[in-house]
Length: 178
Image (cartoon, rainbow, N blue to C red):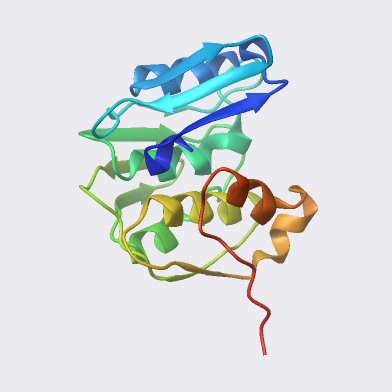
């Protein structure tokens, strides 16, 4: 994934399904190329650029991708402002990203993210489905090991996520609690 500095092809992906998300990724410096089989997504060398995000109803920026975008912005060059207009209390993942070294200030429906050079692996706790994914993505781009607790949220929305990320080169495993 782009957050880890890699490249991935999303088979069956089409940019017209998520136009605002694709536009923000490209503004951040991520290259998205339509292929015969889907979308190829790759991060240019170096850090991504900070972009501001405002969640909106479709075809605007999806609230369900706000947490993942925040994870990406944690290591962007510059300052990003994420505005959540759809749901309240949608920044529950911010304190956990901060445990990894992210610089985030939350004020109501706005979060200001000042990008850092690199996140550090840390034990973190997922509070919901979107937070689970954002913390896993942040962990993939972090230095060291990240342990995401309460990942049972993942199973509601992602099938075999460890297997799929491993196929992309991620070092990830599900650890059973005692």
